[in-house]
Image (cartoon, rainbow, N blue to C red; front, top):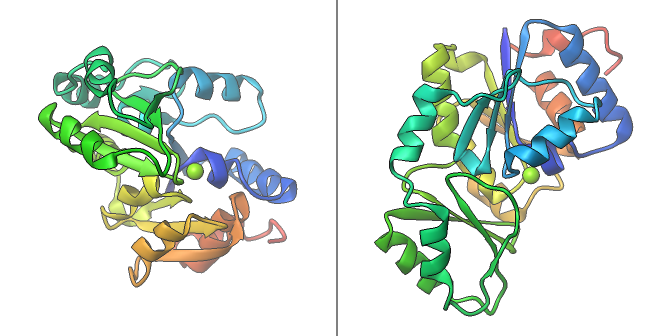
Amino acid sequence: MMLLATDLDGTFLGGSEEDRHCLYSLIREQEQIRLVFVTGRGVESVTALLNEGVIPHPEYIICDVGGTILHGNTLEPVTAVQMNIAAIWPGGDRVRESMKDIAGLRYQEVYQQHRCSFFYDASTDVNAVRAVATALSCDVVQSAGKYLDVLPKGVNKGATLKQLIQLIDYPADSILVAGDTMNDSTLYDAGYKGVVVGAAEPELLAYTAGKSHVMQANIAGAGGIIEAMQHFPEFCRYIAGTGK
Ligand SMILES: [Mg+2]
């Protein structure tokens, strides 16, 4: 058995067309592989992607960098986890209002729940952002040098995935997590086997260096996930016969 909990952009959706086709086919063909998306996208953007019909349908979708968790088939919330997150979220309007005077911080006009997303750059006073977030009992997650998310305290991709894994009572040693930028860093904190795919953000490579349960792949995107499945003995049986 195997559960792949993967980031989307730059990871599951990244890499060569051939590698993507190979990974999506083997997930569709092998019922033993369970699939969870863990993304910074909001639910509307993930739904649009699924409607294209190219990628396999996941069993669960964690979106908004961990702020939202849905059943993949119905898009209904996974209530047991979602209510814990909603209970500690001050509300997007309140966060946005509190941050409005911080120079260099631009709100992202996208649909989002239980998080508030901004763009930032070198001119942004990130310390001021962090101080306001702390006063609201929120965390700040920065990624790829331009994205900044404010989330309820302790909520992130890894923490929400961990709550899901406990809820479905899935064995930790059969889980593979995959990502490529710093908002994926918490996925590697729970001790699950992990892959940082090729062409990743250097900060994430530094963050995961020396973690024996994390493999740093050479191949970008989907191909890096396949490379990791070859690397970890418990997952390599799923790619036997694919020509990879
Ligand atoms: Mg990514």
